[in-house]
Image (spheres, rainbow, N blue to C red):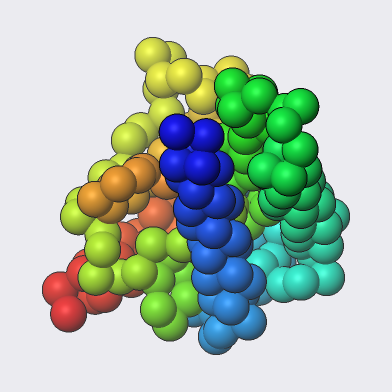
Length: 186
């Protein structure tokens, strides 16, 4: 039973490692949007702060922390596997920080192949739907910043997860809508 649990947690770590490598590869691809400082200023993952460019130099801290968390989880898995002192129920505490690694990379971009949002990548073909939700008095992001109060939240849904960002101008909303319509029809 213990071997089965160890294999299961190894599979989970390999999944996170695969997703991390996928995001790193996509960060190196051609970025469709945002490409200028003006465009990056109106896209936010959270209403208070604009996202950073999806480059290794701008995402350096997030990449290092993400890597260290994966190495820590993998190291603890091997320590637990080779010693009988680490109970399998403690693995859950080791993997708890991995549930938040998607927010370590503070980026949002459209690439040639899909959408990068934080530590997640959604290929164009996997997008099921998207919607723009107006940020008004009843929205959860209302009141965080003046720029976002009259903006929109873009939600992109895939089969397994949903990513979102805050758009502060109507022009950017229209550009994002055009790009999404163009790539989802393919």
